[in-house]
Image (tube, rainbow over all chains, first blue to last red; front, side, top):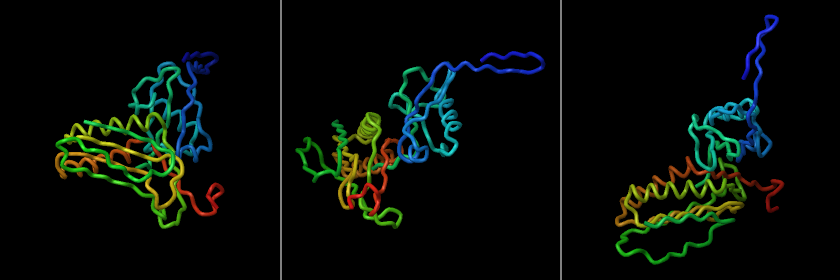
Length: 96
Length: 134
């Protein structure tokens, strides 16, 4: 991200490093009306950043209990996301 | 210690017991059956969706952890995906242990973890739904 000041105006320029398709399942897929949601992320993005970006992209989704899975494992919010990772939103599950 | 995970399309068939390991004193079979109503509303079936391979991996990891914690001989798990009619079995847990107490405790602990950490979802199918049998 660069920041430039000219004519008294601060302009922020964001350079997105990667686009991630986050898979949706169950109630979250039904609420969003789609199987995936694409989010643009900075190079240093974390799982927490992805969750926040999904929340912005789909404001109707309730993410209070949602977790992120990266490459089929639950991810802590600080886990770094790399290009090519398989990312899925896991809301409340209901099997068993 | 033996751990098995089976994700099966549709309702589970009848349980077919195998030969227990020497030393097993308790074999516990728990089956989850689709109820004919959800929240008081009659249903025809449940549609299950699993996020694979994560669902199988999570089940295996939980089973290994609990089998070790409770000193089990075996923990074998079956779960359905797709449509399971009301009255049919969609989940089976078989635990083999030396004694009843640790086997029952392991069953309880496993199901609690399953309902929290395994990415499987169910959706009720009501009579008259566009994709119901009628």
